[in-house]
Length: 250
Image 1: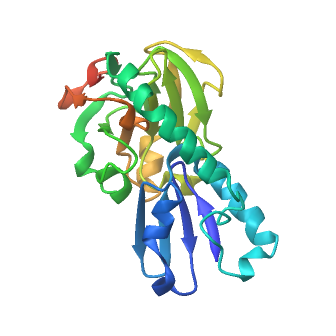
Image 2: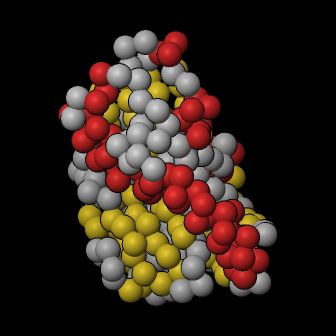
């Protein structure tokens, strides 16, 4: 089995696609499973890098010779059950508390705003990663849509995770399948832990190079903790400029 990942999903190639159990995978915390033939993509969101690392360690340990149970699937044993119990106790109060917080996300890119459902990528179009919006960029520049902090800059520079001062978690994914470019065509201007304000430059990217390499530049921006909020509304469509109000979260 080959194991790889992008900013949001675990990508694997298995010997026998008929044995893939999508419900079991969803039971491990995946928000979606995309299964075509022997290729399997399991949608976990930004935490996928940790899951990939744990899975690789699990495979290298030799334990993969037997069919793993749900609890030890990623070599985490009972950690998942513990997290589920904690989540059950905290999820409802957190959702109730944050539901009263209104946040407006500003457009991180100048271009054309389109619904996520029109994105040519099942994980984003199905909103498995969360609600949000996508932009067809006119200029290869990404700026911060919020006041907050940088949580993660992916090694391949094509995606960045942010958290607003109000606790809204955001993923900006520049292009589709652009993880395959391995950082070429991207220049980052921030690192994890940096504080940012609306309009601060995050990433530059070469639109022409990305397209010439065979990839789309459609850029989804999703709220990865969507479940914490009562209402997420896209308030702009068509042409948007940097800093325009584009999504409200409440």
